[in-house]
Image (cartoon, rainbow, N blue to C red; front, top):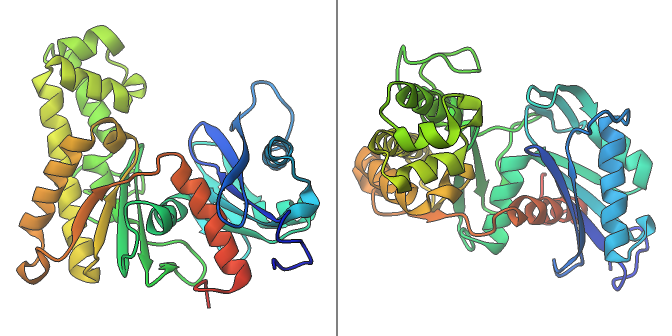
Length: 335
């Protein structure tokens, strides 16, 4: 029976994904069957509601869709982008959203009276894949998710690998090209600076401007901010060879990052996810895996599988709900 006296029949868990331009709350029962959901724009147009109010409203709407009351909540797991104070459940900074020091744990526990577990969005996404998707039964799984940046995560013996007070496994910020391009973190030559969607889009915009990518130019122009993963995939499918070269190069750089992590952790499974992988799964799987095996130490070259994430948007919400339950119940959770 869930804690806090909630009956098994009515107990539910919220998995909340705060990444991207939209937030998603999904309600699960104890068997992780989805009962209801609510999606909302992360930032309201002209609304005065605070971020915490919008998040709480999304939780309430998801509960209503599921036919459950706040008193039925056994716990809320929320995955968020950006650096965290894990112990306090505070989002320290989110540059893309313009939020600073957002007290998610304290605010949501006050609103709903149940335990709230705050984690990195890539961490809970990989945890979802570990329990229900591409990395099931792995002793050690690592995840690499190229998007605007490059997110990384590791699940080791059933636990999300974390620092004492911060999320970790920032694979996007390992240096792969000394004295390379400037990264958003302030360092040079990070994996993110050469293999993220933002890096590829910037180079793709330049290629379009030079007349080397006519399909991309006609469809999206030369504004890198408008060249997203689907636009890159469409350009490759339409025959823009310059864009295909850029994407393949990025995938090969991902393989270098994977090789570095694999040499340290000897994973069973490497999961590739994120927007670019979802848009071009076969290309990324082929190039990143070949590069990883070429760059990793020989003794572990054939000891890990490389898989494409299988759960899509559900990975983060399922993983967040499951991680919250793990932490609340104390099974394989943080010690």
